[in-house]
Structure formats: structure tokens, C-alpha cells
Amino acid sequence: MDYLWTPWRYHYITAAPAEPGVCVFCRAAAADDRLALVVHRGVHNFVILNRFPYTSGHVMVVPFAHVATIEDLPEPALAEMMCLARDAVKHLRAAYRPDGWNLGMNLGQSAGAGIAAHAHMHVLPRWAGDTGFITTAGETRVVPEELETTWEKLTAAFKAG
Image (cartoon, rainbow, N blue to C red; front, side):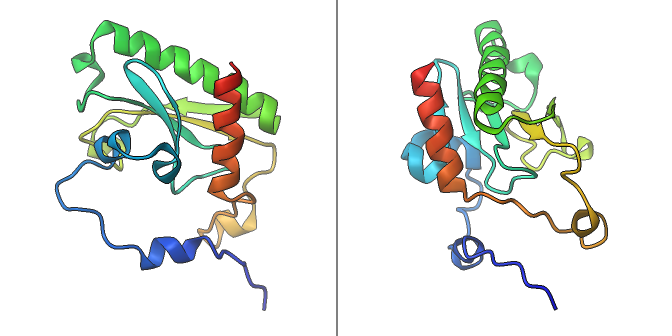
């Protein structure tokens, strides 16, 4: 039998449940960057690691404004969101050398949004062959890097410009 060693998951399964009714992104915006996994703060948006990533380096660009749709975002926030997504791609490319990208938004629960009340954009680096048997048949993802390591790399990259 094969075993996947995932000690970082212990924190997830033993953590106290999130405060009901409090938006996870709004809570992250008000928290310590390291604890919340925020790698960069802009004027209107912040860049945060996905706590449940599909791949190493999976980040999200999140507006500080708690809005569910992009129509409700002011123009400066929309423009900065795209600029931060571009910056994330640049920094992730340098740090991880991926073969491709998934960038996108799931707006609304029926579109697959896990947090439908707060619009956000996903930026995911992808590699040829990064899905295989364990993802397809086992419905399990193998992420080879701890979130803390990813946070340190990307925080330093955003600070350096």
C-alpha cells in the first residue's frame, strides 16, 4: 500500500471552524499576512494563496470590496485586479517555470464559486502531466510544496517587483 505523507493537512482537520457568516476573504484582508497567506496587498485588491490549491502556486486576486459580481467593482479595482493577475503570472513563471496557466473567475454558486459572495480571480500555474492517475481515479491532488514555502517565495517576489 502507498501512503501520501501530508502533515500540513493536520492543521486543516483540527482547526476550529470558521466563524459563521464571516467572509473568508474579508477576514483574510483584516488578518496578519503570513497567517492569512496574503502574499501582496495593492490599493484595491490583494493576492492570497489558495489554502486548498489545485497546484503549487495557486493564488487568487481578491478585491478588498465585498462584492459578488465584477459589475459591482469600481473601475480602478477591476484594472488593478488584472494588473495583479499579470504580476502573479510573472512571479509564478520565475519561481516555478510552469508550462501553462489557468486564469479565471467562477461568479455565482452555479458557476462553481466556492465563495460566491466575494468575487475573486484564480491564477494557477500548470505543467504538462500535472494530473495523473491519482487525480483522475483517486480524486486526490498531490501538491509537492508546503503553503508556507510558497508564501515565502511569492511574498519576496512581489516585494522585489
